[in-house]
Length: 84
Length: 136
Image (cartoon, rainbow over all chains, first blue to last red):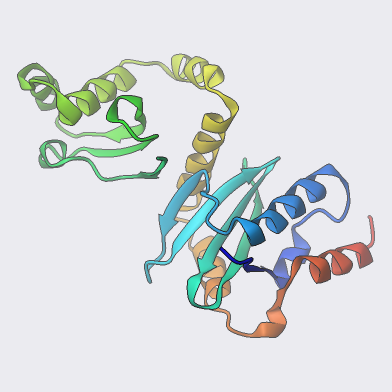
């Protein structure tokens, strides 16, 4: 499988920690999706348009992503503190 | 093979109006019930007694076990889970917390449908922007 592109939504700049271990964990996981785009989340659901969204717990955060198969891209749509 | 968490009870349990959420890893005996709601609990008990085995029996027995557990017992069971399975529970609870949150659904839906390339950054560019943020 060729490497996929990975993109984070611009608004996530407001929620991803600017420094520290949590940032490192999140960004390391995000980068790993390029080579492993079908990494299963810890929970999977589907939206109204039947897009499969994965929720992966990384450190203290829940990272939500989906794979845009036609353009071979993984889109990170949410990063939230997991216990809220 | 790993299977994803879902909320599809089998037909016998669906007829009783039970809503299950469970996760598993391949074989049915390794499935874990994460939540259960059934308006006809006594009928579920009856189903357990009638069943000769198989997935329906397994699910029903696990559901009854969960019903009989106190919150403290559930906490103790969760504490005994390996880290990766605790993460599954956390992700499921995160999903539950946001399932009826219209603001969250709207925000996520908007991003999912956002086709503007200027709104999406690859990791390197994203981190450069992060580096520009002021530490409060």
